[in-house]
Image (tube, rainbow, N blue to C red; front, side, top):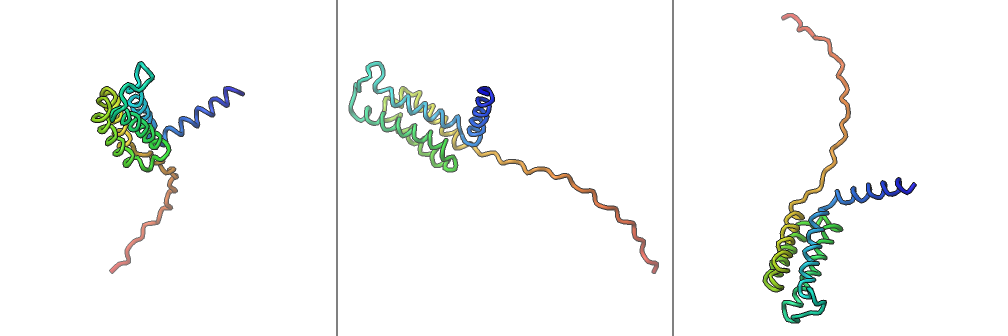
Length: 143
């Protein structure tokens, strides 16, 4: 009973991930968390509370929101991807080289994957074609 419920649950999760740019959203969330945590790395206290510290928090949260947006509003994937690329480039300039360069690069790759993703169109069911009845050959009337 438990195995059947687990299989149904995993099947529904797999179907959910197939209908949206799931891995692109995962990369954006991971990049956002990385950019968010770099200002407090090792100390869990904000070391620098200037533009870099605040920008790291704000841009990290924004990238996490964009990743969730790819999951739950996949129709708007192109706009979300462009905004995420702009945020990743801003994080490169404003926040510790964009999370020590890794966060910005991962965000740009994730946003690129999100903009390139297209939903699968279900193929129409093939209906067997009915054979046409044969028509007898008609001869032409003599002239």
